Amino acid sequence: MKLDARQIETRTQELYEKLRAAGLKVTLQRLAVYRVLLQSHGHLTAEQVHQAVARDNPALSLSTVYNVLETLVKIGAIGEITTDGGTKLFDRTPGDHHHFIDTETGEVIDLDDSAGVKLDLNALARRGFAVEGAKLTVYGRRKK
Ligand SMILES: [Zn+2]
Image (cartoon, helix red, strand yellow):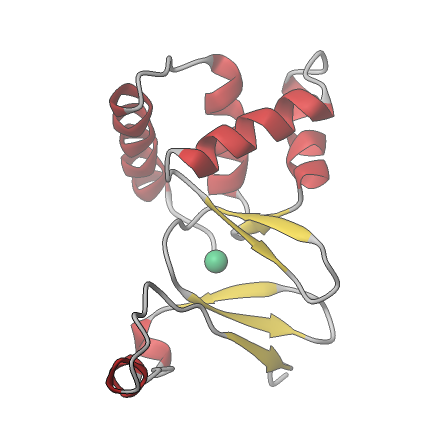
């Protein structure tokens, strides 16, 4: 799902705060990379981000884009997931959340609480596991 202009503005303000809190500067490169992710459907490879960023900033190399993405992951502004095929996707939504992967198109969709996907982490705690987080990936196809 695409974010609207107001959501993008709010998230951009959050990026400023996270960069400042980490003692990092707000640079045009960081902003450009982050904005591409915000304007996407949510999950992109570094190559896809690079392609989109390079339209306005042709001088930006793939390795620079990659470094910026890693920095954004480190400060918690974005997340990253690895698909079963080993493809690393950068996720505009940081933090633990569940995903639905369309096995036909490969599209990755964030599932929020309204999707009704719940894990009983308390059951694990009762078995002595100290749970730190959980991300579930649901596979299937969307109804047409
Ligand atoms: Zn996600």
